[in-house]
Length: 221
Image (cartoon, rainbow, N blue to C red; front, side, top):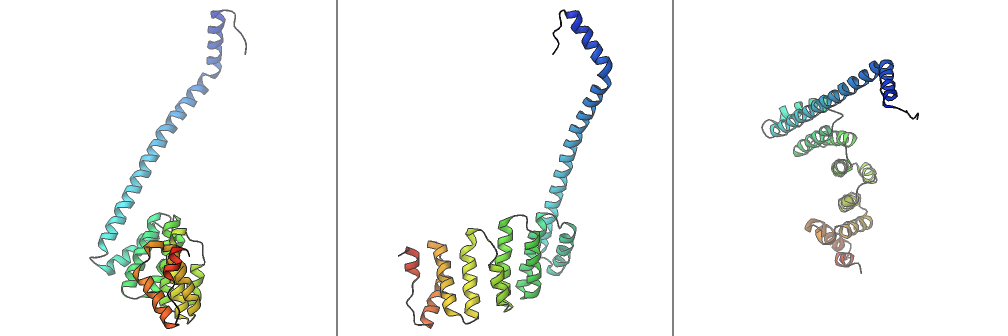
């Protein structure tokens, strides 16, 4: 960098630089400032859109108990219009629940598949996956249920996954595999084992004249 000998030289240098580059500098400042304003306006616009979408979703969920048929039509429209948002997956879960209430397992399977495809995080995807496997068991699609359960799930869903595997094997008459799966579910649950899961293992043990081993699994002996 050049070292100026006097203040006059510095002033003249600044004047010369400004004369040659002033318009460029001003334009840069204006563009930068406009960009800053535009970015903030963009953020405000996005926030408004997200709030409006959240309100629409909330209103849709509240309508589910008032008019189920209207809710179904509006929910499907909502998914089509907002398919890239996290609300699409949650809405599909709600539609699947509504279908399961009427034992419309085919419709429930369809909506849960949509929920998995559009899930924005692993938790929602895992919930939809577990529910899909249960529906597939109801439809007696046992191979499909086991294939669904074979997909990677967060560790916190291990107990639910193994229990449904046990149900699937039991429906197929594979009692040894069912018992192993139930034991794995209890081991994953630890002290939080549900009474219904314990009952399944107890009933299975009595059916095949085997000792109940749930306590041993829990204690790790």
